[in-house]
Image (cartoon, rainbow, N blue to C red):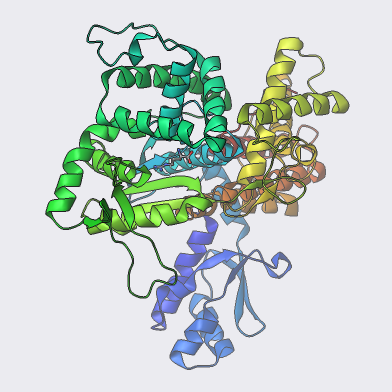
Length: 587
Ligand code: ARG
């Protein structure tokens, strides 16, 4: 059974069609002015414009056409031609029963599933993840959960940055520290050791060390560039080192992402597509897709009518190196061969907009992927209280690991202040603090539309009041404890009879889940689920305050209200999981 809003849309759609007006104009949605009725249809105004009729008269004709319909209790016209609708009370009973019985809690799967590749996370080997990677990871992970739940086939790829200058920095810095390592002996042709010569601490030290030196020393920079070019050209010892660096980094990243609850199907990187580059470039040259320009090879992507000039994509530099755009194009080719996605989403910082525009146009021009099948899912920055990009106190970039641990620490303090998770044992308390801390930062990130910048404010994010992750976890925990209490008292769920206004409002909130899912997937915008979860939790809290459940007078009411609570819990937990959050059993 479709949502009540969709059922009403079908009735109104028929009415519009019977008047020879576009069926879509009969679309019904939850009312923005619930005091006039829970649902509204705004189609009479545009329909009247099309048909050159008076909108109120047209709205009246629609009402005449639906008059007496079994689903509709009242329908009336307001203002210039808004149609306000109230469904019959049994529509709520039936819909609530269905949501209660449905594993998907009332959100239907898509009828047109796609194969979607999501490129997100994108950490660079050996550079510590920073706050920008938080947004990509949290948003990308939620999108993969949402689209999978909708019924799409999703393949996620971390797309490690492991092919650029940072690799040259690492190689040369390691050589400065340990020049005798066999990897640096160009004449060596034996077997290299299988044990990595560095651990993650070494990498974390070597990279900033080198990049710092290169900033003020051109020779040092040239050395890193040279090593990068030799690595890309296939120098054996460097290739083996690259793999050691990647393996060491990936092991650490798997731990970090695991702790964040973020999972990737593919752990591929820029370096993986190196074997495809030579042929791809040759093919681009053959077909005239690439043109020579001052010794480099470029793909021209500017178009007539562009508002701002888009530079050509540099495929091969004059010194023969391949760049970020080159590996992105080769990756599109690789994914076409290996995965065959209908749609590829790149969840990457807004600052890379021009880069993706270049890549998408070049891919289209070369026939690798039609432009509409590649999409840059952009996001804005996380700012400090000064409104500028979040920095550490001494002005450095904020490490993701530090950010997460400070959120967990603050969550721990908050729990203690509120006397929550007090008698669960130290280990469980720490687990709850972790869930609350992660929920705080993930929810704070997801609840804004992604291109909006937001201010990082741990005090606000970790609060148990207001539109926060911790508030939602607490709401779920309260229902869980109610369900346990009901079980102890031997109260079971039963047929749902929606009577009180707060019960109606709760069912209305539950009814809107499918639309929120659709919106979140279509706009690549998990904030629609954040809004929905928050509305649902608030509707539950009003219901809980107004309608005694275990204290209700008769057994049928108890059973009905308990069933409503159970359905709410199921949908709320689903929403949390779609956002990558998890609620503890108790707190
Ligand atoms: N490694 C890049 C960065 O840290 C992000 C990679 C994004 N994905 C891509 N296919 N370019 O900025």
